[in-house]
Image (cartoon, protein in one colour):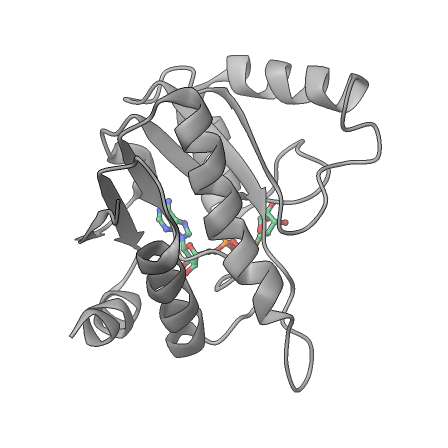
Amino acid sequence: MTPTITLAKGDITRESADAIVNAANSSLLGGGGVDGAIHRRGGPAILEECRKLRASQYGKGLPTGQAVATTAGELDARWVIHTVGPVWQVGGGDASLLASCYRESLRVADELGARTVAFPAISTGVYRWPMDDAARIAVETALNTPTDVEEVRFVLFDDRAYEAFATRLG
Ligand code: AR6
């Protein structure tokens, strides 16, 4: 099935969804941006599970483009799905890895049985991916990934991000 795509503006940690996606880094141990906000509002249970993941199957960290779930702690969600976007380097970035973040997050969501999933604009903050290109990759991948997720909600932090995604949706 193809999910319905919806857009929201604001802080993703205020959203209610089965799963909220975190724009994490490989350490899984927190950072700034969405990651910082999720750990702050979600509370210590999330970090505790991330530490366990680091002590078990992700001893070297979560590779770029992959996704893994933990509890959502005190967020209004059942799970946080952590994924690691690629960094935009001078002149470009690996678009297949950014697409993989969305695809793998949806695969994990399917495994969990999540039906509504809220995504931030992965890689467009600290990792510097240009917003228009990131919006294109996010929307195309969500529309082209077979999934049982019914709603993919992109939660955009400001007007510019919202407009970039709205333009892509047409
Ligand atoms: N809700 C929704 N969107 C947000 C929020 C929020 N609370 N806060 C920021 N954004 P970023 P990345 C937007 O930097 O580029 C962290 O330190 C932001 O404006 O969160 O994938 C991690 O630990 C931008 O458009 O993620 C990694 O080290 C988008 O969310 C690194 O940053 C993504 O910005 C990951 O960088």
